[in-house]
Image (cartoon, rainbow, N blue to C red; front, side, top):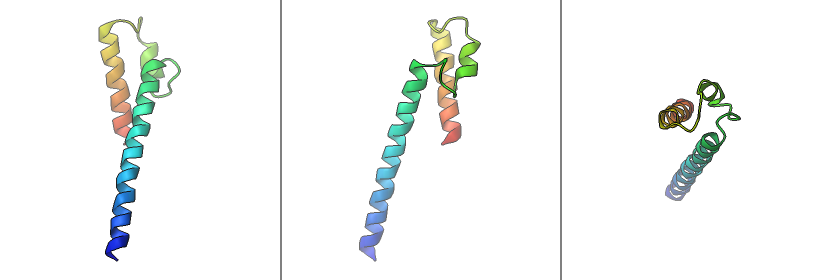
Length: 71
């Protein structure tokens, strides 16, 4: 019984790591492709320029809040 609990705990911890990697990849893709990303497309459309620092911060905030809301 103890062995099966250890195996389940190990699988859960690996799953958590994989989910975190997946979210990292989603964030990176949304950051690099804000106009195509479903998560931030509307927010990115409101920016006149995506090169301004203030807009980069707003974009990062939008991506983070979207992904944290889905977690």
